Image 1 (cartoon, rainbow, N blue to C red):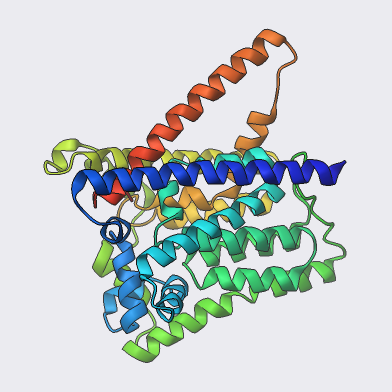
Image 2 (image 1 turned 180 degrees about the vertical axis):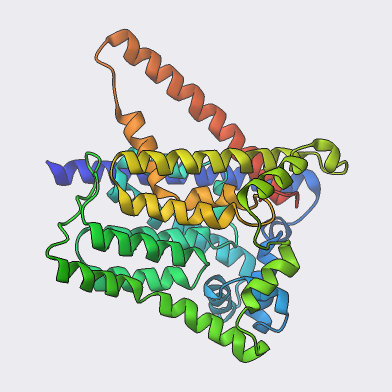
Length: 378
């Protein structure tokens, strides 16, 4: 029976993946038709250009050193077949999103996976960014760690570390999972295997920490080019004005950006920064809930990212970081799965869920259109 339920849940996840990706494709085509741009230009905005430059020329431009090599390597691989890299990486990332959604199903049940697929900023899982690949590798690394397959988990975590700095935070979470063992498991999700004796826990933690060598290797590669070990941090400062700032000052800097008057030529930017603040709040609530559930590893994974994102010059890219916070979607899945006993209350729940989904799909389409038009979408 459990296998049947698992198969049915996977089919539902695949169906939702198809529908949401069809919506994003429709927004893309509508934007292209209405604005006179091309599909490649619409898919190739913002950070995609940095990844393309790395795929073509390596780290010749020091500004591109702010980006890890995983996504450019996939782009370069597609170039060998003569495929347009921007379109090819979009297809790869869309498929990686499905892989990640199935992993989310294993971690938190089908409602968690559906919640992830319905994330308003889902456009970043179908364009040439790193979120989809990171989640495909990282979430399965967590699934395998729960099952006690630490070497396989480390291998996938190492792959995740090639895509973005968030791999460091993933390793933090996996080490905590190795040390503290089991965590609450929603119905229908994969249970966490007991961590065993202290010696076994330490051994597993050591294995879980090995993917950090990938990050060290990347920094060493940049050192070989520039002669400095802080090339990645320097690129972040030069290109995105990211330098260490205390969280309160970072919050105050972000408050300036939520005023539409700060962006007279593009007032929608103010809304994106408002969502950045909301995303920080979501991250704090997610961390608090994980701590309340004694899910220490999940809490550490999210908290480590929050500390990094809120101690920069201002809150930036927190919206996209939401996609990486699988504990958030596990919590959403638990909340949605609760059905009241009273028939009237259950009907009200269904109506509220329908309205929330419709509003979410509208927000997803708005966010995607912003990106396709080349507006700031974070």
